[in-house]
Amino acid sequence: MLGYVTIGVSDMEQAEAFYGPLLEQIGAKQMFGQDRIKFYGTGMDSAMLAICIPYDEQAPNAGNGNMIAIPGGSREGVDKLYAKAMELGASDEGAPGERLPVFYGAYCRDPDGNKLCFYEMKM
Image (cartoon, rainbow, N blue to C red; front, top):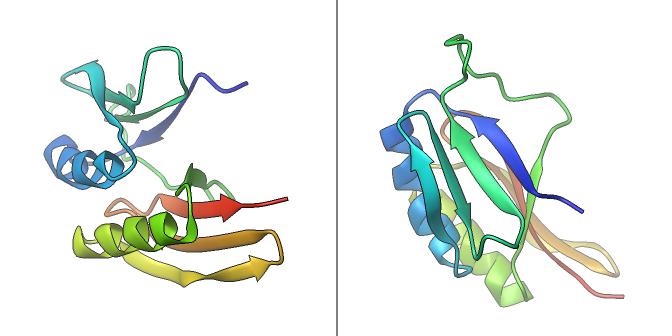
């Protein structure tokens, strides 16, 4: 259903230093890109996350109500992603924990203020 999601960043080098090691935790890597945009994923046929310097050269804005949800694969995976994000300079928006009987999640913001959720969902 999703091809890719793009989020704006203010400093590509800083964003790469954050997202490269973070997404490596779930087997993702930088698939391709150019100076102002980089795509991360596990394959060309899977959903990807792109980080970019906005095309209009205006400051990036973290949207109110916007959030990127990244599956952790397990509760331990969620904990690992959250810990790595904190190590890489993210700010806390909610430590790992059960939110609903079927949902375990953790929340943070990247250095540009983009909100991320790491989760495991079981039905």
